[in-house]
Amino acid sequence: MEQTLILVKPDGVQRGLVGSIIKRFENRGLKLVGMKFILMTRELAELHYAVHEGKPFYESLVAYIISGPVVAMVWEGEAAIEAARSTMGTTNPVTASPGTIRGDFGMEIGRNLVHGSDSIENAKKEVNLFFAPGEIVAWRRETDSWIRE
Image (cartoon, rainbow, N blue to C red; front, top):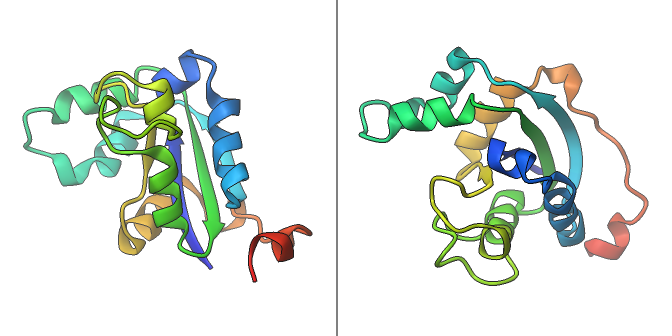
């Protein structure tokens, strides 16, 4: 079963949208298998955004993600990465479709509420950055047969 990391960024936490964002992924049929409320350290932020190091927006990106608490989650499901990313909407909230998290709640790229893994390889790296193996819970959801064939 595919897993993906989702972060509710500081803007989503500060605006009180954590519950609404979680509900979008639950409604989609993804299964929550890990969650924690944290203040990211600079070291963790730099590891998480290492792919952007050297880009003009890198420092402001790191400064922003450590500016307040985030909710880190691991969601699981068939094609979880693609399902999560379509639920989030495009990076730019102004062009994100209505009905997506960013399309319904966002206005600017720099305050786009959520981060989601963009590939299986990155999902594995990101999940391992934020969660120890014992923090991911394997559990049987009774409604799975009503979500998947």
